[in-house]
Amino acid sequence: MVEDITGKPLPAITVFSRAIQFMKEDFLLQFKSKIDGQMEDRDICWVLTVPAIWNESAKQFMRHAAVTAGVKNQHLRIALEPEAASLLCNYLPVKKFTTSRSQSMLQTFQKGSKYMVLDAGGGTVDITVHETMGGGKLKELYKASGGPWGGTTVDEAFKQFIIQLVGFSVFQKFSTECTDDLLDMFRGFEVKKREIQSKKESMITFRIPVSLLTLFEDEIGETLQQFVSESSVFSHQVKIVHGKIKVDAEIFKDFFRKPVHNITSFVRTLLQQHQLKGVKSIIMVGGFSECQMLQESIMSNFPEISIIIPQEPGSVVLKGAVIYGHNQGAIVERVCRYTYGIAGAKPFKKGLHREEFLEESDVGPLCSGVLIKVAEAGQSVKLNERQEAGIFKLNMEDQDTYSFPIYVSNQASPMYITDVGCEQVGCVSLSGLDISIPLEDRKVAVSVIFGGTEIEVEAREIHTGLKSNAILDFLQ
Image (cartoon, rainbow, N blue to C red; front, side, top):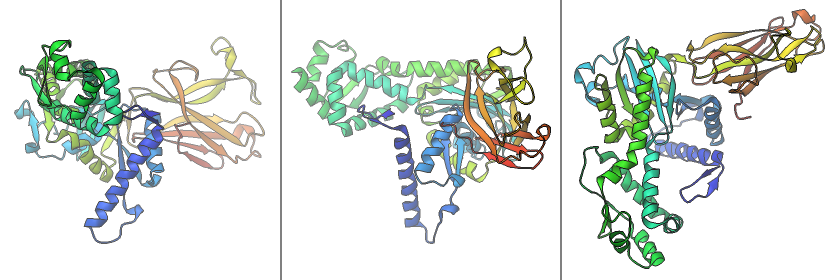
């Protein structure tokens, strides 16, 4: 469940699918009003962008939401937001950027150059590192990382300030009865967010809704202007004048300090990783990258690195997604965020395997809870590169179905599927296996194809060639 600005809950799938449905229908309406001719669903490749730090379940949730909204699954592509931004930046001319060190601008996208993409959006901050391979191709050097330090953290700090100013009950009533005015107030705050600078000392002025002033006076019995000037803790830092609120710059800057500090500290930690040696540039994209306090912090803390900001950083991901839709093979190598494996069985070895996983079968005692690793967290995998998970033998004479549970782990080398950090994210099944074949010859080869923004798994019975290409359901 997710809540709206007034606290009313709705199922998340309803919120996301309805939002996608509106954008889909609005696009088709605009397209048909401006372009003659027919257009079928099969003519459109829909690209849905998601933060790179999201796990596979979250990506599949967004795919499910898009399909629920009427987008055909076979016409839908998932793009990682910092990758989309990186692709666009490789196409933009130099004049479309602002940079702290203009002499290094041309070198940033030359073959062999390494750069960091800092995608500071509304909710999350996504960071990835790329190396330019030439020919419009990119290689990921370090697994996507980041955290919940986007622009909405500043909005929340501003909201708490208003609550502290007028009181929770007044704000709650204002949110419920005057929602349009509440949204207008936050839109005005959004403009001020982009303008604030760390060196600013004068008071910052923005309009406060008349409805909020009226509700406060009705509830408290005096005007907000009187309350602030006479008894509020903000009496020396806040002034109410002619329907406008003037706030001391230090209070306003406090809204930004925590997320800006978190982002700057995280970038510093990343740059100390040996895989990032040779990174000469940081490209700042996303709506929160328009914040001058964030720009100033990154530039002042990393003077030896070129800080590059494209024009309209908030729209870079959107435009890059169009490029990704036309060239989905542009990212030729990615780094696994998790260890991936398949639940399987191995001959039981006393003293090595745990007794709780001992299982008798027609081929002898087995350890049934073993995680057979396919790829390790931090490992580089090439686009559409096939990783062989191994050959799996059937264990029972009458077995005509074989299922392969797929697991992820945040640990490098988990041994069992019950180890801390292991989570089942899907399952691949082969059914209709020929039980007339001798048990020793009934084997299934499993392979995993990494490198795309999603992951494919294939199971193939060796003797008959029977295949199953899994569409992993991470929502179960």
